[in-house]
Image (cartoon, rainbow, N blue to C red; front, side):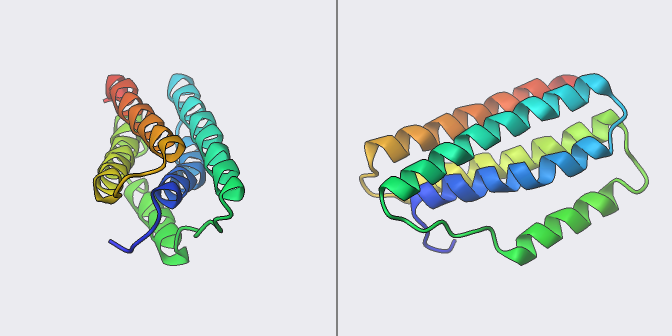
Length: 141
């Protein structure tokens, strides 16, 4: 894993959610599922804004998610939804994305030696939010 600050991991993790959730929402016809996606989107926006504010306060320049990762996520989403746009399948895809996020932020927390208390709290909030999102989406499977 590329060496990034824990704060930048939070920023990138939430950025991926912000960029990928609207595409998945657009593939759904289920209003209840769309509301769940909207809720997750708002949570990621808030956490992302908090990460940006902390970065500004600490004079850290955010490192954006690499363009290839963004493009790959978009292409994979479009391919995986060509044949199956069922709510269950879309929920599974979001759960997989959230699970990757849990793994990445947990690893970043473990790799960071003596993280700043504010940053650590934000990373834990992201972790808790992401784990809750997985549980909420399981009802759509």
